[in-house]
Image 1 (cartoon, rainbow, N blue to C red):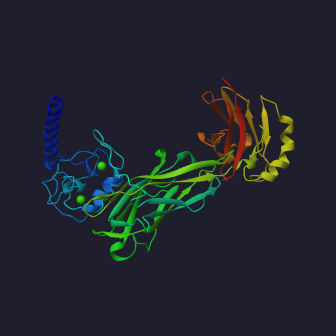
Image 2 (cartoon, rainbow, N blue to C red):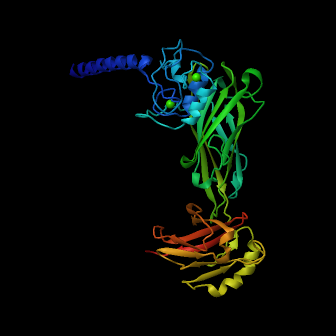
Image 3 (tube, rainbow, N blue to C red):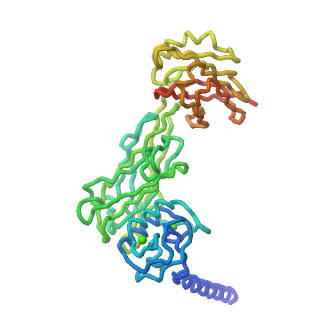
Length: 423
Ligand SMILES: [Ca+2]
Ligand SMILES: [Ca+2]
């Protein structure tokens, strides 16, 4: 039968191919070492942390060339142990000094996300919440205002589906980066969003259940990579809350309530032999509530965003400038920064091409200006170098209403609205 013959040929070709592949992969002497990319998939990522942890403490031959620069190194002679995938433990010796130690973990840190050659994406099992433990994200306070901190409880497994074989787990928490505050810390100890491993839990107790955690904030991707690892080789089991995740929301203006979701995915849970067990992912959504009542509704309002009452008081003063499209003048309340009142001009408004801000004598008190669209998304941020005038090119913005935040050096924030006319 023709079909079967063809199929048989295909299968035998495939088997031959797989044999060649497995021989190639199994011959670790030919696998160059890229420090930190332990599983040799072309990129240093959270999965390599698991490979490091499983091999930690092992010893073997040193490399001729030691070092952790992002480059390829000729591998050492094979170590005694292999990973289940067939890769030799010598791949985990990032610095080539003959022991899997903290310095090799530091190579993962230093080379994190770097790539070489063609990247073969890491593969993650996808768990089923009806049969597997879930890595569950639950917001403690699902209704929050811009600028506030949202805290989530993180649970791993429950009494119905506990975790039976825990040595380590890595996962990623994904979020909409526009809604999260800018990170000012090291991405390995981020302040905009961080996971704290709780103590006295089944996963992080005393003795052999003591664990450690690592995290790396990929700010532009809106992603936090997280690893929990037992300090000691071995396994334990359990279920329940293991950590908290806190994230600081961007302090911007939302005209309407906004729903935004946080999703855990790319989960890899392993035992101390690197056998992987499925864990179900989860998503938790929160509502960022509108703070637009802190804005004046007129097109000429420059008010401290936190001082609504005085905004109303001052609206009368700016009334006469309403509709003066080529020169809008706004006045900050006299009770504002220091003693003197500050006058700022924004013109022309509306405009299709550009706008000028005249800070006048206020320039020395202004640090930064930020343009937001009506959904509160940051479009542009400019540092003000004490120039009394600032020209802003707005030709590329879609027509509509925008907000200009003026951040004072004293930490004071003020908001102006402007309109972009059609080009
Ligand atoms: Ca890798
Ligand atoms: Ca080493």
